[in-house]
Length: 284
Image 1 (cartoon, helix red, strand yellow):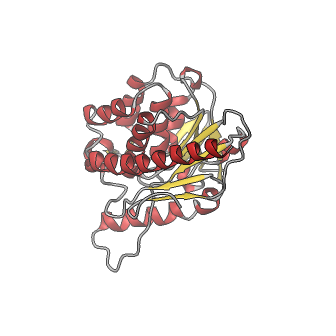
Image 2 (tube, helix red, strand yellow):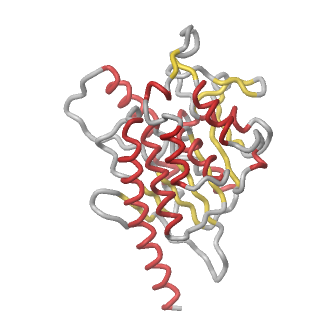
Image 3 (cartoon, helix red, strand yellow):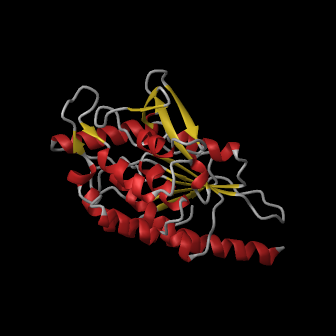
């Protein structure tokens, strides 16, 4: 176990690297507003000059991940959140005129991605990137890492069922990838990454009493999402779990606080990682 008492960084299995430059994969979980902690983690990663080769994301993890892979620095992503008012729930969640397929639509996200991404093709990204989506009709999930429907698949990956309307892409209806794989490790295994780092922002602490319809909804979603995470977390070399127990998936107005927590757990992780790396080289 690496980390401090407030945040958890588990080392599941030691990477087996024999004198070669490792291929490193980063999995960013879904978690609604909690995903803003990913930006802080990426900032710590940048400061410690730690580079990754492949990024995978689910839901909010796919939004943050694609912006990072498009070349935005973590601070630029945080500034974009502020500039586009994505730190206010009323701007992130737009009410549908008809509730036939979901209470809210992704109009705001669509506009942000349209302006932020250089093109609508996965090939425009600076790093290899995958996002997870759930096929609503076929009850299957898939990872998408190529093609010219980049924006549409990111929106689909973040379409929480009932809350958001499903997203049709290439003739299929998709919803949030977190329904079936919230910690998107699978494509990193297929890419044969030597080191896999998972950042899981969903935690479900014990609570004696939960008041308010929105809090009940947020906890129910967290319970549902977290149920498919454990088996995939075990396949990571490291799993970073920021302590976000005080926050919910709807706390979009807490973007800076979530960034700070993600940064701190990232700073501790990379500091310890560098020390272990130096010790390993010294012992050779």
